[in-house]
Image 1: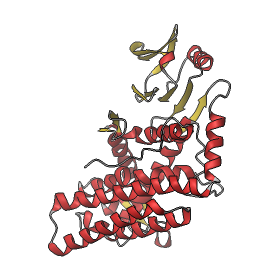
Image 2: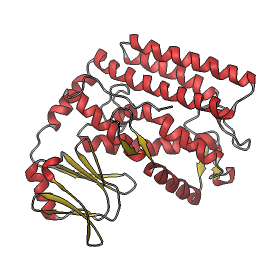
Image 3: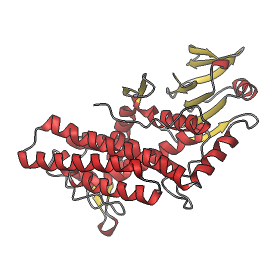
Image 4: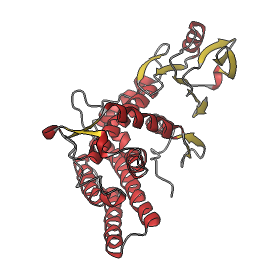
Length: 343
């Protein structure tokens, strides 16, 4: 169990929730493990198949506490709440910003500025840890300088297309050096390729970016935001544009570093992939299951959140950022506090 920004997160999959008076009680195999007065909560998010008692559901509705159900792997199932209170106003604000070019560009620039800062952190960590040759170090220093300049330029951007252009230039600089971060010569990487992924590394990046997009979509659903109406990514049928926006700042820390870790620590091999010609590379079934287990394990590790200044599981980062974005849109925060990797 973890309480974060007045939201209770149930992270253990075999927890059953029920009520005792006006308290929320968590039990595992009939034994009480946790209780908290419901008036201390704004929401409950449970990653458990066990569910909650009808009595607790009724109490949540009466007290205006949103109860959200996800699978243990983070797939959104649904939410229970009483008469609509704040979500309509929150979504109206979201839609209004999405239709206001300067306002949308402000948030877009925040997301991409944080993305570039975190890409710089990944490259800088390589320089500290691996002591490359002089020529490679010069290439990294030049790229880091270019990325810093691109990040600074976002302060003056007032339209989304220009922000997108900066993001594209930064991605070119970052992925041009990504192959140096891979410490196994049998894994190739000749630049980012998406549809289809042209090598095993790209297949891993695409697969886990997709996983992250689903997790960010679930996080936005839990706080009452519409994941399909974005500020940077414009509307497109079936595209979770706000989820794509919010995951930008999380890509380097959550996915890129994870992919580099499983490659460099030999948790995956080229033989774990199937080459499908024009359709690119895909993971075989068993290695995919093993890597998903490693992903879940990684999400249980804890970090100090730079804005909240408390330790949280890495898997709650999308939920923390979604909550902070919602609070910003409600006017509770002066601006959106992006997530930045701490050196």
